[in-house]
Amino acid sequence: MLELDGVVKHYHAATEEVRAVDGVSLEIAPGEIVALHGPSGSGKTTLLLLIAGLLAPEAGTIRFDGRDLASFSEKQASDYLFGEVGFIYQNARLTPHVSALESAASKLISGGVGTREARARALPWLQRVGLADRVKQNTEQLSGGERQRVAIAKALAGDPKLILADEPTGNLDSARSHEIVALLASVAHEGGACVLLVTHDIQAAALADRRLTLRDGTLSDLAPEDGAGALDAPPRRTATA
Image (cartoon, rainbow, N blue to C red; front, top):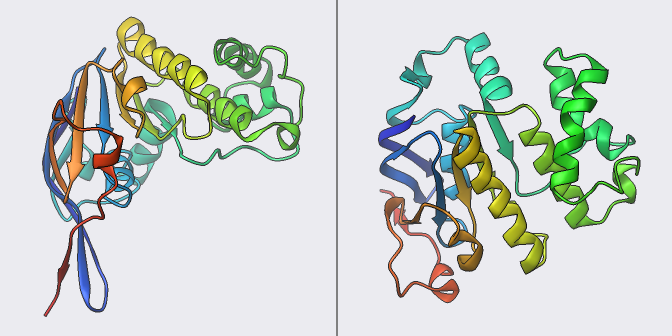
C-alpha cells in the first residue's frame, strides 16, 4: 500500500513561490493503477520524485508497505529505490553503447544480479513491449519510441512493487500508447504492484482504475468533462513578500 498524508513541496524563487505539491493525500492499493493528469509544470513529476524518495517533502508523510520514507537510512532509501520502485522517466535513461537487452538488464546488474540471469529476466519484458526483433540493436540505433520502450522494460524487469511512470507514452503513437498502458495495468492487476501513471493521454488513461488531477498542487478526481485542452493551464504561482 502506498499512502500519502498531507504531503507538501513548494519551490521558492526570488519573487515567487510555486506550490507544486500542496497538501496531497493519496492511497494506492496493491493491484491498483491510478492515472494522474494535470497541466505542464503542475507538480506531477515532483510528486513522483517525492514518492521515489528522491526529494524530501516539507511536510506530511509518505509510507510504502507501512514504512515511513522519512525514517529510511541512506542504505534503506537506496534499497527501496532500486529494489522496490520501478521509475519510468519521461525521457529514456539508457546505458549508452550497449544493446537494448544489456540496457534493459543494467538496473538488475547494478543491483547485484548476475549478467546471464539479468538478461534472462529482461528479455521477456522487451518482448512484451514489442522489441523482440530489436534486442541486439545498439540503443543509439533505436528510435525515440523504441528507446522509451527499452526504458519501460528496464523498469519492469526487476518486478517492482511500486511503479512510477512519468509520461511513459509521450514518444509513442496512440496504438502503442494503449498497449503500454494496458501492460502497466496488467502488471498491477496480475502482479499486485501499485502503479501511478502520469499521462496527458485521456484515452490511454481510461484503462486505469482511477483518474485524478493535480492542479495548483491539489489532488482531485478527474471531472468527466475534463479533456486534453483543460490540462494546459499554467500552474499557480504565489508572490512572496
